[in-house]
Image (cartoon, rainbow, N blue to C red; front, side):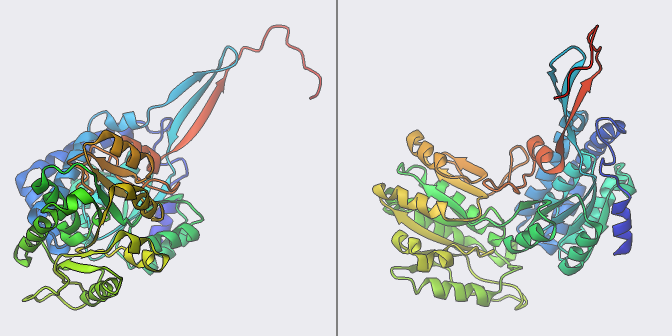
Length: 466
């Protein structure tokens, strides 16, 4: 661990570059991004990374390819002068001639990045490059189950011109990484992962963190019932793609009573039952065992009025080790009144990082109850309001806080591309990913420099003490 501590300590607080120091490095990173984007666009390279993701993070080819595609587009977005534009400053006239205040985006210097297993390429690349663009020196730790993907990407970035000394890449368990953070004392740590570890790091690192943690993500279907096939397909993708192992996965679905009388649930059930191990459209759950998920199902079904809509059984004919989960895509109906009871709420809103969702319905006059259920949640990552009724959208959006919220008939909770912010809201520690705003928020701070050149007014005299 010591070499990592020493390496980080060599980076000054003012970073490897900033608007006053080594500005040519902004151009260097524009070039690196352009070359890496070109490489990832080559079919043999993109197929290599897609297959590599599949080897360690069980998802279908199309889901794994989506990760490579988003990463490639992100790198395209920050080619050429776009890195330099991230450091754009502003000036405000002063009180007298010769005075002007300038606001600059300033790096933190030594920083750390910790990313999870479920997106082994997209999350670490986007956060790593954001950190580097702004002038920081990061130590990067990817979940060891999947770190080979980023290890290969680091080699590609070196091939594209990334200076080897700019990034430290560590493979370790969580305990060792925690010790490294305590000793190296980075100026900022980006953590993407579970809420429990996020809260521990916030204490250990005295608040010098940005967090993109868990999400018990909700979807509300409004009063206008249209395009049932399409909405059912999006619900299936949101809840069960990657076996539900996305922090943006649909965890709970609130259906307006108009939808309850449609064929929506039967269509979602049919789509969920198409999923199979053979093509990894359903597969191993890496952080929750089959036993734990079935036990959670059992507890939920003890709630009055609840019922199993589909799934709830172990997958069959497989060789998935018992330390992982393997269950069929599952949905459980629970009445809204029961969800809101204090005795049930914590249980119902427990995030299960697998192919598991809660479904409920509400009557026209029960929208305040739905909004109360959302207000009581603690993780506000993604959400969807499926409706083309502008008054309904206005009401729900105005009384909720999720950082990435899709609104309209085609609204979803998952599948964030590189062209919009992805991250939670409602927490000052919240981190974003993907956009210039996200990079500036997470990987730089504001520095104000006030120039005051004079001249001193003619005939100026020392005034009385004040």
